[in-house]
Length: 428
Ligand code: S3P
Image (cartoon, rainbow, N blue to C red):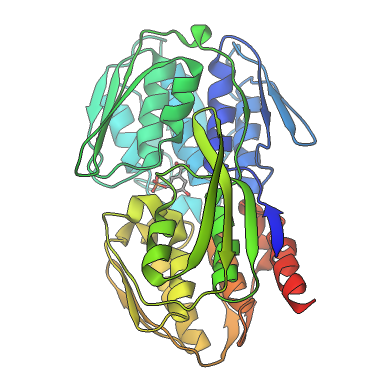
């Protein structure tokens, strides 16, 4: 069996880098992810005046920053989380800035955050194309944001977190109602900082999250935490294990229930795993997971569970390709707005390998097969597509190559080495 510790959680890493500079004192974090997306956040925060020092696995972040308007435009690269959360923080701080991103990020919708921020009184405009980056924020007097109650039309942790950051930095009350609760890392970190955050969950899977401006940012406690491994990165290794590449154990991985919907589907498809809970870090549960090669059955996924596995749809698609029967993924229209149009890219690539797959407006229907699969996959620069097909390629009877192996640096730079360790230990 191969034991692997995956790199730190991407969502938590972004949030620590954005929230800790607001605190009243210095914070330290072990295991902040070192990847392109998180580097974009660290660099953006430095440009705004934050002091972030990195050495090995440790990161030191100074609190009570003297914020300054960045001299140049802030480039968020490929990272939607950096762009959307940063817009909320900047709107709250009232700082003038221009935010841009790479070609993929410039195609992704930004109205979902710009509209509520404008409703709070932030003055922002699109510089090139309506609804897309680059966006310019105007400077504004501190304390002049209005409070907001918002119900996003889509399930989005980025939208919720953007509004919470605007409320925190702008000193105003905000409330976000979610029809389906999304990942709650911002809420947990705000709780660890001592902010007045309240979460009211309903029996139907919804949540109302509110933040009161009772605590000024300078009164927030500093953070000291070890960032758990990223469940969404671990998912590719678990999938390789279930698909037969070899038994694998992932250590110290985040097990926040708003992220682990894949495990519910794994049970339904007969994928064998054990879970051992270990520790809680800044409100985040962690533990280890062991996956063993399994005979997989087809599954159905709908919008109810989707927010809890939104980044795992590529993994589900490759598992479905090897499961007996026809699997269905529905209610996943948001997947068209990720780093690539994931529904189209997954359908195209499965077809290229010889798997029968029907692309629906809001999902996929995939007929599993145990015939040999071979071919070259087009990743569209999307890290999660490359890793999902990497996991499939490690399965017995599959020969899959990807056209852009290097895009994994966005979230999991050591992915190919870790995957190779699983296959090598099976071959030994
Ligand atoms: C993220 C939220 C999710 C997810 C993304 C990271 C976050 O997007 O897909 O990879 O860190 O808040 P949504 O905004 O669609 O929830």
